[in-house]
Length: 300
Length: 331
Image (cartoon, rainbow over all chains, first blue to last red; front, side, top):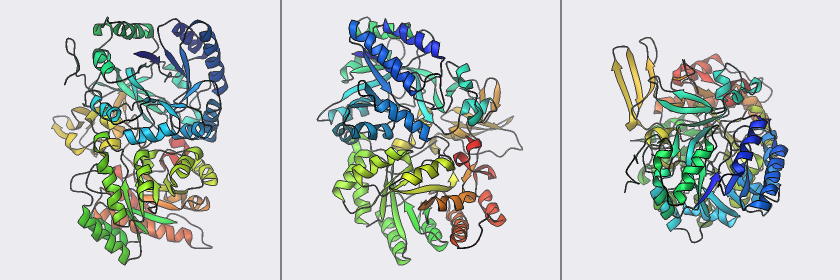
């Protein structure tokens, strides 16, 4: 089982981003995804900066390890500026690109480049999967709401299987909007947002009126209120034919998350190393539920 | 400019035809369409009746099969495409790539429209579906500003259809998991958002509560109108502030933009609301028919009549309407 670091969802300062990836280089990750995936207005790093950072990391790694660097594209494109950002990422011919929308799929397949599909590209069945593979897709990150049984059904029906990646830890991206909810919360409109989402490196928690952690708002994106945590299910994830587990960047204690999953793949599984989180989607329940509690594995 | 109208039942379809629809879109009674509500939509017998009535008036029938096909029941979605083709529907409205590919291969003469659920918001995304499958028309997501719609239309090689009126999805369609996160059922896979079976209205000493699978969506004081509990229109707490964090109960209404939409070459206006009553369909369709006729009238200046505005407001969520994402400050 390989471990991947997903793209950062939040807006962090450039120095923090650089420091974060520097730290990540010495962890036992196998793949690192980089790039802005939420908002094309975020300018601490623009497309050329991400490309430069990615290529620099790839070069550093080439000499010392077989870690892979992957570039991720924006998820919701609205303006011509967004599209030109995606074009720049897709026209890099050295690193694998994760397409997070069909614009990137079109650009990459036209250029006859291999590509990965991120969780917001709607691949829900074997026929869609096979079609995109015929266009050059080599890796598939499963949509957030797909459950274990459905994934098995897709993979069992596949003649040829891509590399399969599953979001396994972190707040799950659940929705994208034209509206910036962070700006709205602060009484600003999107055109004059002052990039204030940078003040919330973990996003803004949204609770029900009873204090239940429901969502996290992060600019135009809505994330799950609690982190997904599939560490408990590690043995089953291996049996399911999953190649890569995606761990989503968080502002603090990312190394602990990576360490807990790394121990699991070395036969030293300790679910209590991480907060319980939620696992409902994987168990065919509402996403916010926690099904596998301490001392139990995946329910049948 | 074609007026594309919703029908969840034969009486609604009659109402749409009586009041000026150019095309009516329907779905079959199962999870293959994005308005999979109890008692709604068409079985084969009613779909045939719908077709006869539409043909008698010389109008068009579109069939929406716009959810994502599940891996273990793909044949159900294929079957829906076959049924629509057997009806000689004028187009099917699809989102799932595997299903679009099937429709293209199996029924080469069937016109394909790309559903809003496919969330194609850029020139290359539209080109993907045109080049791969010959998709003829795409319904644009409700996330683009008017200027972005204009830019897209200028370069697009597929016909574009935009939303005129109805419930407002504030999230990019086909890319919203809020409903399944809380209830286990999603627009993408089940054709429902905030399913009725998960909804609870609870009277308490301090007012009415609405819940979705137990989660408190809103709490209404006595003088407040209680709305159906959809997650994006609930009142929640952020930073200690209780508010409509995502959006207020409101409906989308782009009527004021008709001249610009016409000038930019938008081929069709879609009205949302297959879950609505025949009376709703009648009023909304009639209002939009008059407005589109007015905007197509040469040599006259278009303005939204007060009467139209009132009728649409009356038929809106929370009795209010918005231009939504078409209007940049809304974003």
